[in-house]
Image 1 (cartoon, rainbow, N blue to C red):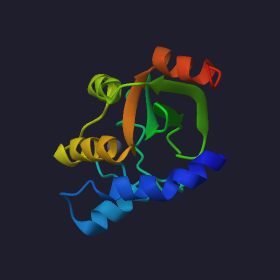
Image 2 (cartoon, helix red, strand yellow):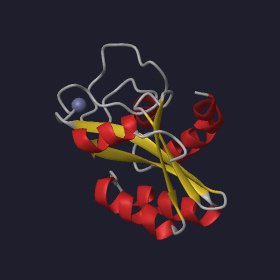
Image 3 (spheres, rainbow, N blue to C red):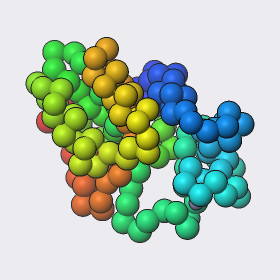
Amino acid sequence: MEVAVQFSPFIRLILLHMGGERASTARLRLAGKICARCGNRLQDPPPTPGERVCSKCKSPGVHRVYMYYILRDCWMCQFLEEDLKTSLPGRLHFKNAEKIRTIVDKVGNFANLQDRQALDYGLEIGRGGVWLQLTDEQYARLKKQVSGS
Ligand SMILES: [Zn+2]
């Protein structure tokens, strides 16, 4: 919880980097008021700012989580639920930034080039975040894993 609050301005900054659409549409999308994929208006009020997809666009068995990474002694990855508020217990530690790239290549959700540039930039400056699409199994593992392991 505390960590999420600490990181949210940065997450918002990253999200704002996704360009290529009209500013007003982008604002609605980033506020979670329209579906990030089809652009349909979402009926229920967004719990918190951040992209969401409608129930039609949500594929069954796919969980959107936000991974943020920061370089300390090694690369530390933590995960947030789609609401960008709830942190998941699972954490990952890597010596090599390439491991993060591998994860993102596998389960990342690159809508456009800006997203990839944001990852490159994040790895360069030592922190950043990226949306991932996880299967039920991968998601369950993050839910279970005890932090610090
Ligand atoms: Zn949709």
